[in-house]
Length: 163
Length: 414
Image 1 (cartoon, rainbow over the protein chains, first blue to last red):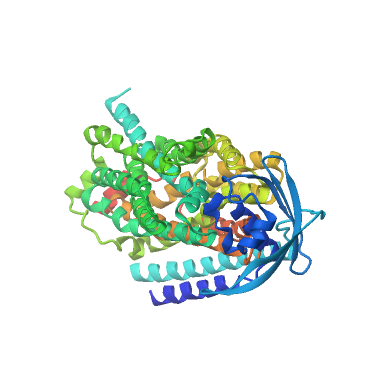
Image 2 (cartoon, one colour; image 1 turned 60 degrees about the vertical axis):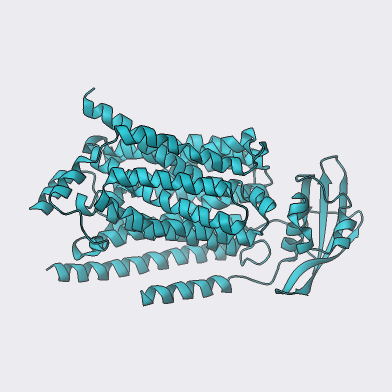
């Protein structure tokens, strides 16, 4: 039981270590998604009301008011974005991501937006490298070897106990 | 057709209905997640924790599943159906996320026990030559339950008055099964025989005695590795399709329904192949297929390619449960079978399910994840976990295709 708890704690620590500083593209995506969920989306979690009003003066609208949204690749903290609403209106702009302090600590948010005609090439999500794939395969081999090792020991001890 | 055949057909219907709603409940939360968060409030991070906590309910359910060796299979099956129905009704009435999480924790607990006892009943009531097929049918209903969620989403159940709550009200249907099942269902013959020998009062830890220990651990690890991937895929696919491919909720529902329908044949094919070629070779082929098509499903962003990839991922990935269900039950004599199955499923498999969804969500978080994409995180997890399941199954899980359960029980009773 103790070993299990230690393993679980190690796993949680490893999981926490997997996180990284916030991606500006992700912050802008969350903000746009929240705009598309009506008032329940609470975009104030991702941007001040004035910023939301600048980029999406129609908000709050019914959920799914946005027909298409694209988030481009960040240049530093500046992220180009494009919104097409269900009435066919297309708006583009650049969102600048910063950090703010709240009761829960420091969090990323969309600090400002500049609306204008900017090109937006959708930021490709993911795209695994050969190294990442090899690392995953390596983890798989390590897991298999560990399992085989444990089962071999268990089988030996069970045979000894039964004999 | 003999009376026995007729009874087994009825039994198959009842058990299939139970596993159908197990599949329904697995997918329903993932599909209406956005609606729930919109109605009750909450973030994606909250959603990840809700999934993890509710899945832990099934781990707790293993204590309940183990009671099948004490109170009998029939009584426990009916009890779990009533419990699940009540928990689902409470979910539909949720005023907030905490209530919903607690209610779903209960539902998962009852479902976990229900699944374990349903598989045990199949193994005990069907003759060896039909067992694989029966397992295939009962487990395939799990996928049909998932398909049903997709169909309901596509036809717009969420647009009815109760909104997302409508999906959980559908979960009240199993109550009707009680009226049918209570009268027509009998206790399994093998359990009655074991009870008459007073072997039914065994410890929950009985499967861990030296005779069974290696097999329980091997099957447990196989189910852990497998379900780590399958559960994460089932939970995150809709999100991946909607957020990373760009499908609407209705289209993703249609995809799931169509792919699930095609993929459900994976259970039936597995059932037949298991009886012909053995459990282990079929498992290996299914895991290899799940690896290839699982990676393809979460790597393509082409909506046209997504559908065939998803069909085959479901065919192999979910279809493999027919073999793991046999692994978890057939190597064990009747007096300990339910407990062994409960350990394999509710302790190992569900733990894999909890961790799988959590790890993929953490790695793939668009803002803070190390990988930054749910599709890529799923791919890495698939590559890391499924080969491990294949290695352990091949070397440590016994082949039970020709296992004579009656002879095994006679040996124990002697």
